[in-house]
Image (cartoon, rainbow, N blue to C red; front, side, top):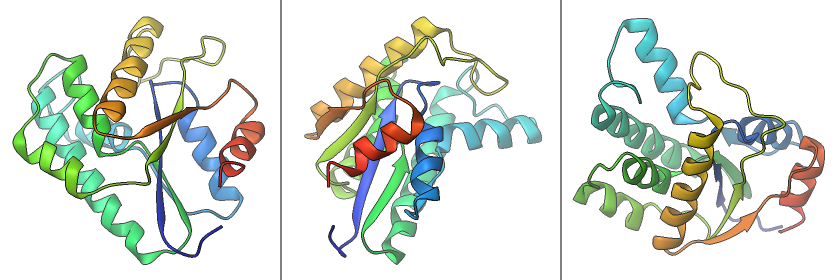
Length: 179
């Protein structure tokens, strides 16, 4: 493995096990950052804000962009592999999924703030899918989100590696075996 910083994105639909995988990678000693959307939903709910996926979707996407840019810069303090729970192109996928236009500044952010060319994508897995206070989407919506993320990353020039439906430990080993 290289000592050069490698920003690695793990994406997919909601409830596919991204956060659990990131936790496993973190326990193996790799730096990770949490997903923007879930944290924003918690904060907006706490303060009574409306920048939510079921509220002001445009404001929600702008908060996600701000979060992802901060995360991208935060990784600059590290060497080696650095794992992200989603990345900036996820925002374009989210906007496409909700039939909202993609702003020029988001396109510019996707072009400037790049990750390594290989992005890991986790397919929907009904056996582990759960809804909660931040994840209100149905499994069908989770599937549609997966395809929106797949399309967005491919559109912006990333190569995708599908992570198989395995245990968390096996998924972590699968990801690490690619480096």
